[in-house]
Length: 164
Image (tube, rainbow, N blue to C red; front, top):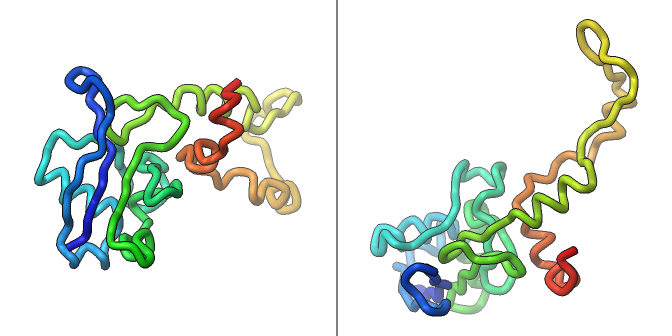
């Protein structure tokens, strides 16, 4: 059996957050953390977390797994466990908890909007489309791959201490 410690907090029912102890069958070592959460929610339908694509593309299931921020859908349980037999799952740090593993990412998205992460072109719009050369397109490589999961930002202690 795999031991699981999972952060729980339902503000309408709980006076404070707590860690719930659960177990998973050993067969989950071969699966992803999101699969483990799905199994645990079958046992307790009140468990709340975000998920969508299951492919590491949407970024909705970012959470803290054994002390590091990951996407639950692409993090293998065995890799998260390492040499331990306990999976500790918490919400992303530094963000207000809405419920269980669901966090309020409003400040994260507010900061993202402030940097204006889109292409800005002061030229008048053409009648059909803006054409881009391969060289111009290459300049964008490495600048658009972020899926906005919040894992990197919420892992940074300076962001916790100075959210502005």
